[in-house]
Length: 253
Image 1: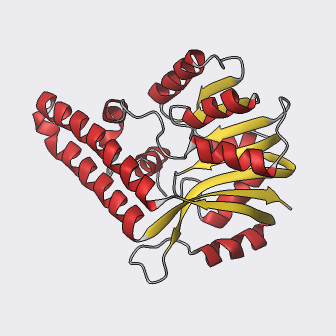
Image 2: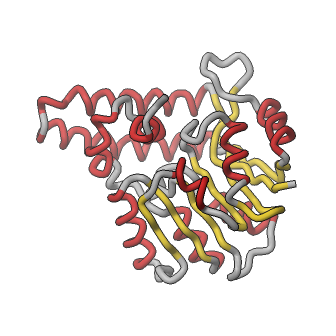
Image 3: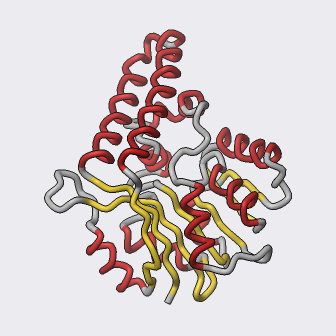
């Protein structure tokens, strides 16, 4: 069974846990590490009545881009949990910069444990972490335990294309799992291809610059940073050619 460090590395497209100490440096220029804050706020606004009493849990929150955006735009309280202390420190700083520190709580934690203890949320968000919580079916079951009856789940993942060489569920297969686990799909937003390419190109440029700096500083570990760039590019190629990034809002039925 994979350790949480191995799952963390995989979720951030790192081939080995040896890279984990360097990830804050490599990703320092990026605030939004996965899910689109704008898309998530759009889905919440469209499908639920959001008040100041709403409680949101942001699992694997990264540097808090989604949490801070929700608090700022919607005025509800958000708790973000991530395993990386540097990311949590950045998230707290961002909440202060945007004047929503009273609405945001950020904590260092293992989300595989958090889903067992965190309860009673109106909305739970899981963004772009792959199989950290298990299979898609296991993931939804665990997430359901954190929300109130009739609560909402927002999941950032991907739909596989039929006949693709990589193993991602198709939309039809996701719908089968939703039915089995007692949730209903209210809406799914497919990432725009042109927008995705622009974001990927910009982010890859930032990461390549920081990788070059690390290679200069740690030449004996150059292979590690080259491997990360290659795995990042492989993920970009998949997103642009074989799978479709999607943000889904689900409701407990």
